[in-house]
Length: 220
Image (cartoon, rainbow, N blue to C red; front, side, top):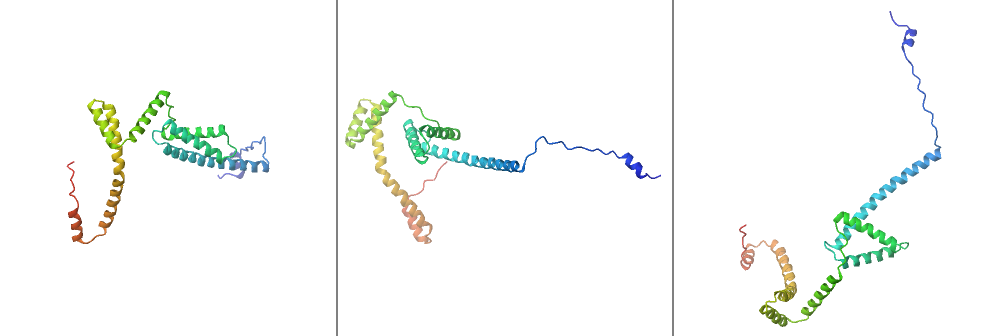
C-alpha cells in the first residue's frame, strides 16, 4: 500500500542550523578602507620586487666597475665618488644615511659576486709598493742603450733579480712600440677579408692566393 503524505513527513528529519552571530559588524566605510589597505600592500610588494631587482642590477654594475681583484685604493676611490654623487642627487641624505646605502649595495654585491672589500695594505707593503714604483720610473727614464748596458752588467754579476726588471722594461717598450703596427695589421686583415668575399674573378683570387703565405696545417 502506498505511503500517505503524513507518513512521508514523519520519515523526514528536518535540521534547522542557526547562523553564528557576528561579534563585530564592519561598516561600509571600514570595508572600503580595508580594500585600500590591501591595494597599498600589493602595490608596495610590487615596488619592493622592482627595488630588489634594481639593487641586484646596481650591484652587478658595481662589480663590473671593481673588477675581479680590486685594490684597497681602488675600492676607496669608487666608494668616495659614489657617496659624493649619491648625496648630490638626494638632498636630504647625509654622511650616515649615504654610508648605510653604500653598505647595503656592497653587501648585495658580495652576495651576487663574492667580491668583498680588500684589506688595507700595511705600512710596510705600502713602502715596498712605493719603492717598486720609483724603480719603474727610473728605468722608464733611461734610453734603450743604458738598459742594455745595465742588463749585461747584471748578468755578468749573476744579479738575476735585477736583470729580470731590466728585461721587463725592455719587453714593455717593445710591445708598446709594436702596438700600433699590430692594430694596423688587424685592420688590414679585416678589410682584405671583406674585399675577398665579394670577388668572383677566379684569376684574381688565384693571384691573391699566390701572394699569401702557405697555411700551416695543425697535426693535432
